[in-house]
Length: 105
Image (cartoon, rainbow, N blue to C red; front, top):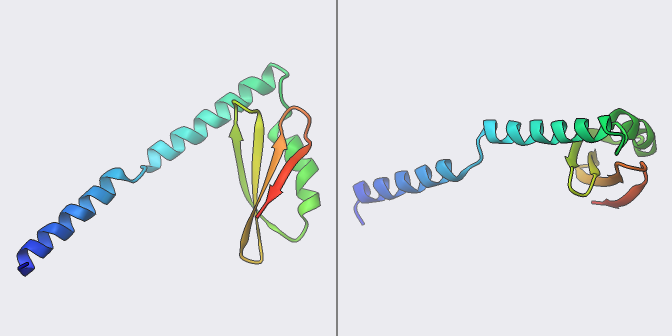
């Protein structure tokens, strides 16, 4: 293979990777959707607020760096992410009750 054809192949591969990567707008849109659904469910009295959930869970994770939440509206579960000695720890919390469902990492 000539250096020109190698260069063209590499450029095509790079273009494919860029085209298939999620954009920042798509990620931000997903977060806005999660926030909107959580807010609607909170206003309807179906779930606890993220602030209340964090108030219950963060003190139990003392010494760990809090990375932030995700919300699954379908299962009404908050996933709180922490960093502990280089390991990511996931804590899944029932948004209706505030109970920890599972902790992994």
